[in-house]
Image (cartoon, rainbow, N blue to C red; front, side, top):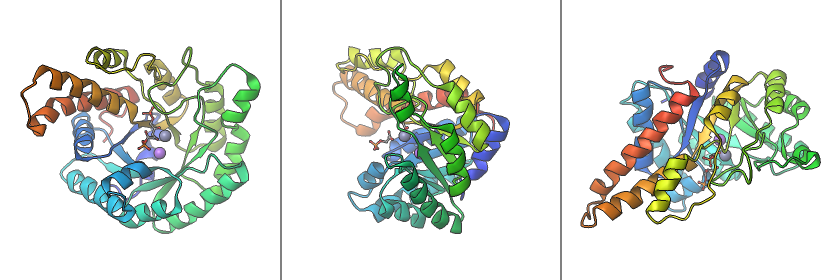
Length: 311
Ligand code: G3H
Ligand code: 13P
Ligand code: NA
Ligand code: ZN
């Protein structure tokens, strides 16, 4: 269990590969992620959103953050790979403080919805607090939204590399998530997948720190198809193609956030298992084959990211 996420991301940045940052909301997803990382001999980041902390703590932030730390620490102690626990999209000061106090390895301050100067001020405030206790901080610039061809729209949504340079220097943030055209969830692009690689290249050149890609799920079409065959309604679901992920890594992405690919795999196989064994009522027997598949998708992601064998 690593105290500071920075250790594993700076190595990835130097050697040009990416570490998977996988979201979890409960024990089974956490187990699947950690088993996958151990089998791939890959350092891994597990992350909880504010919503996940509230879910785990049944509405109580301190309880949720503490349980997340205890679960991760207890499992990670048995493993050979480095495991970091990260707060994803921290917006509420109270949740960020609860995560820091509970023992998270890093926190994200997401003030990207605020004007640049306020985002900078807010990020700097969190960096000062987190660095004082030896944990690292991620911030975001731009908005996570699919991009249109229209230039005016692009400029208002995507990261400005010149701003990124000033932002990193002023805030001393440890890793940065630059918006380059991805978005959260299972429906990322209306037409063709499109990312702004030129911008990404400039941000890396100007900042020289580990960069983070949010909204990076692939949304595998065979899994979407399987889910739909068993009654889901997910037509039109689309993610970031594998070759684009690889290109983003070449240009400086070192942390790849993934939630949707795990969710969609879970739902597809849960539907399949329930429909194929209608007399099964033991949740453990239902979950076992489902989470084997979640583990497989995590392993596939880790191999694409190039972090297999890097532990
Ligand atoms: O950033 C989005 C992640 O997929 C977490 O989402 O807020 O539903 O837990 P959530
Ligand atoms: P996906 O929805 O593409 O999995 O992105 C997750 C994410 O960015 C979490 O911060
Ligand atoms: Na994050
Ligand atoms: Zn995100």
